[in-house]
Length: 611
Ligand code: M6R
Image (cartoon, rainbow, N blue to C red; front, side, top):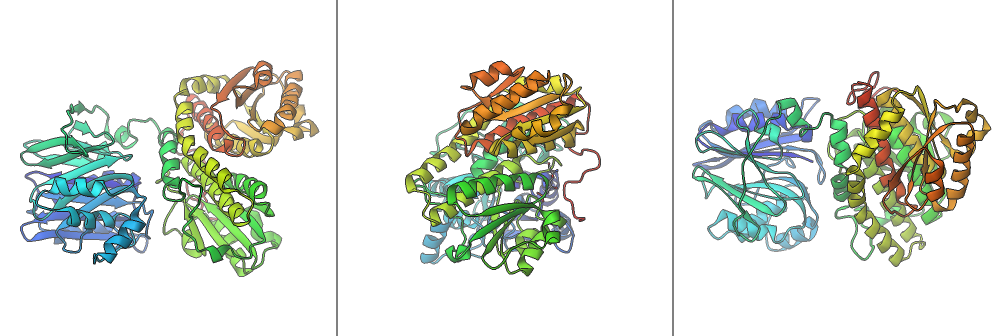
């Protein structure tokens, strides 16, 4: 997720673009840049953050070097996916002639074959990014009309994008396009137009907004703005008057970042999967095959939510690849003289990539000669840099302390890694792999179905928000999800919550179950259903209140429980990716009802850099 902004009008563009980028910093902040159209050609400044100084702060110190008379340009604030956060990888990107500039948010899935072909044709690439291909494609398709050149480029690229492009051959003109990434056009005073990923970027200047839909383009200059589809046919659009204040706009109108991030999960999952597997079931993790050679054990390490993702990773890996695997809470790992050696693959999972405990575990593993694979959301983070190989989740910045979209994308990576290793071990047939991938692709729509039933979850949360204690139970993969559900509830609602393997409850904890204790029973695993049902009956016999999160066909459980939330159909193995979503929402609505500070819960920090 990145922020893009463009301006064309009668005022100096550089300060307007910088201001817009500052408002979009929540979309990405590892590098930033601005390019302007001037009579002498395109002028550009861009940089990554350096030495603890934020990228935009450094950029702000440089814009004085740009011609202030320039009144059209584009800007970008980056959250790196393809290519490290460096000065060269910062956007905008230019074609080789320097006549075309682009700013891109999204992922160009087929950038590798496009780059290979363009290189063979003589185009010289400067950056490691997927986005740079668009600048060269523009030059390649240009024959006098910028919008036509953009249409030509769009016909070649696959993936998601919000793009703003400009050319020194067309002073004052910006062209933009959208597919699966947000883009708006703001109408300013006296024939000026702003183009941006998000409303906060333009709110200081205008409240009159056009919202582009997927498959739409805009071309703006001082004469006006016109909208077309990718074929060039006109698209009628109406202006929307935005009434949000600036803070609400940053959250796209949501009350909290957490809810926004819960809602972003379908797209985050699509992005994280993109370009990593083909339709026939072949997985390409972008890691050389010999990295995994001779691996005979896998150890997953992480903290908090990331640790819960590890639990799912271990289960899938053992089931599919039949490879011995263990999980360790990162803060425990280094102190127990872990049994790792050169044949052990240590998978270090961390959203931020900066968690001190996870870093310490990673270093310990390397010291023992293990090879380390990081799973992280932050390109350029310490975990990413110190690991031998990295699999990035492409969830975009997660701002709420309670992790949501980072977790579900970690689970998706866990599934891909387990499939990859199982296929390598000859234990996953191509048809099974293709079927799993097909299901992974279907999960965003299933989450959308759950998100559409928020009101039911709000009601269920109301039923438990006055409780002082709650239990979550489940077996197998459901237990892993129960642990995450309990963590979500306690960290933002401050209700004491514990998760138990459902069969374990009767070994002591059942003594705590009374009419006042809600028990959330997670039951998606078909082979374990009867057993979980028995455990629910045990709770009911002690007058406990049960909320079941389960499959629609589990009628006996629905009848036994006091309340039930039905999940869309899903396979047992991939169920955790969608099952956690109602638990996230129950925690969220309970916290809101209790009047808590949802995004910044007491005593907690987003990145925990102390051991
Ligand atoms: O950045 P990391 O994934 O390494 O963070 C690990 C935990 O601190 C984190 O998951 C924490 O448990 C979250 N607040 C949970 O919502």
